[in-house]
Amino acid sequence: MINDLIIVAKEAGEIIREGFGKNFSIEFKTNESNLVTEIDKKSEKHIIDFITKKYPTHSLLTEESGEHNHNSEYVWVIDPLDGTSNFAHSLPIFSVSIGLQKNGETIAGVVYDVMRNEIYSAELGSGAYCNSVKISVNQNDNLRRSFLVTGFPYNIEENPDNAIEIFIEMIKRTRAVRRLGSAAIDFCYMAKGVFDGFWEVHLHPWDISAGKLIVEEAGGLVTNFNGDKIDIFSKQILASNGKLHEQLMGVIKSVES
Ligand code: IPD
Ligand code: CA
Ligand code: CA
Image 1 (tube, rainbow, N blue to C red):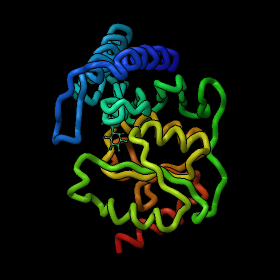
Image 2: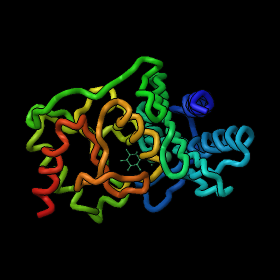
Image 3: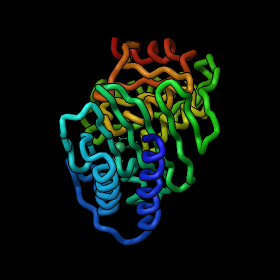
Image 4: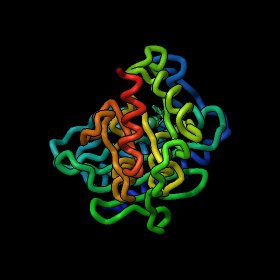
């Protein structure tokens, strides 16, 4: 199934690449920051058609059309275009993210970084790869020298979980914090050792499923802000190389208390 994940993510990426910089319709979802383009929908339709044809009994959970429930132990969790705001504004940082769950556990995941033509993949227990080359998290344990990435939910004006204060504290106590605009790519750059840590609140299962497995298979740790194990429905994500986890939790805690 991992081969099918890779094939369909690349095909969807091709649809997205063709649409990049062209005219496409844009609609608002919950507010004027939260967009969906006709390319998101085209990509999603292609992925759904591919999976339903090959695995008609499997369930799907997708960003744009929700649950396609067939009561299967297998659920394909799909973000057809992660980084829609970037895509809509012609910033070439976005991806296709697909995770495959079996009985609630992610057993395989693929993120396709469309404009760099990089496929990140992982199967449970078999390591993480970028274009077939094994990747791993870095070993930095120095918070002051750490290079982090984060993101903000579309309801950031409500400041869920003190997301704004946490960001302020993180930029003061680390080397730098980036905001790329594609959570799936954030996870992958963590997995290959570019970033030492990644945190975000209010992500969705389709942002988390593939990326979390890729980080874990690259030797990293993914928990909530208390350090507890999480599933793909968690509203808090803290991913790190493991070495910095406690210190990052400490920064977050210093804001909460
Ligand atoms: C968004 C991106 C972004 C993150 C947002 C997500 P979308 O996904 O992953 O980096 O900060 O929270 O919703 O809407 O572009 O698929
Ligand atoms: Ca997303
Ligand atoms: Ca999306």
